[in-house]
Length: 433
Length: 94
Image (cartoon, rainbow over all chains, first blue to last red; front, side, top):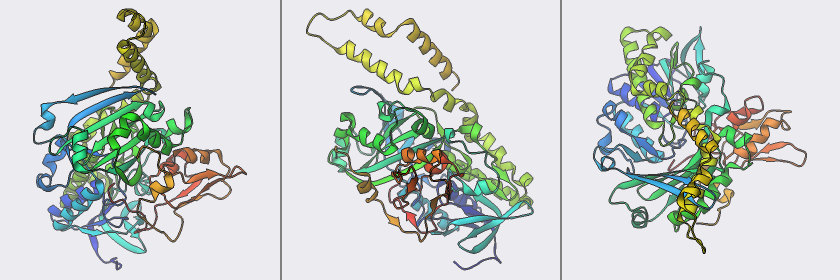
């Protein structure tokens, strides 16, 4: 890339992931001059997802996109599994609405999807430069004026930081809150390729139906987190999410990669992936701190979107981030379009971004669920209850060699006053989310 | 597939492009800092280990650029940047 110090872009976007590409697509559609800098060989090369995107909240923001989007399978079957060491209980949910168009959610592979989205943004007129790492912001008199990337000085009215969860860019601009490890989890997964017919048979899928399965309990050795499984067209995404502090501060001491190896060896999982071939291993940090961990979303000449802004949320059965990324990219673009109309790229001129997010599902969700991390980060949920539920089921189903104990005393054995009281407490916690 | 696949073999499935310099370094004089021991547990690629002298060492080859070590250990003990443009891991599926 040649030095372009003479050219002034309307916006430079740092990072060609979902937030950055959504912003680029929206800005370019409105005719603005936009440059996307992506450090990977292609968009998606540095991105990792567990595997599912919820489309409903963002469908209308990008009406032209969905028809041809390379999504994998629409999720028609949901399961949650409580895992004790030698037994598990699974709740399966099938609802006709999950199988009706427009579908609510899809499994997704970012290597495919982001590459495609980048092409759509380029078609609208966005300029994309890959293999380009932004080394630092250009800040003059407290205002962000552009970026330095591989020795090139690139200037713009606005820089949009979409550089992911660590956001070194937002950090340099002084927009982040002090980073605390308790607000982050680590996700790591394997992509396991498997014959399409076998996959569909094994998971009981018709056509392009997909399955999503979440696991809690022994899968993380009782630590805050869980396992996940999503079916793609011809592969399975299988992985673990676990709180960083839970790994470093809680017993039993176990190395992250061993959790996934053990998970794969569980009989419930081993038979689902049998005959499959692992083709990729990936990992990424996930921001889970929500509203309380969120830093500033804008400053003079800069906006922050996607994971960089902390837009990812774990509320138990749904773990979401990608639709917040795309929506925040869209609203960042809208803010830049307005700022250009007013020719005001100062903090005040860009503050419209936060107003737009406040009026949208993005910040409404984060406000509604601001307690969810503290509520869910409750050790009993991940260790005690999966064990308790497993033991109750074992006794209910058991037919011993001698006479069987009556059912009520069996239940009563587990449901002491203390146990019931602690369940009430859990109920109270849950009322906060 | 039911037997555990070695971590090295798993990382061997990924596409990596070498960087001419290490993008993560343990800060000078910090190798025995207790905070670094967290990286041994959290690194999903198992790149951190402890020597007999109680020093933590990192081998950057195979880094998935997830950022966990930086968050777990902190910037006081780790010098952390992304690999230069066009190098490092290149996920095909993600």
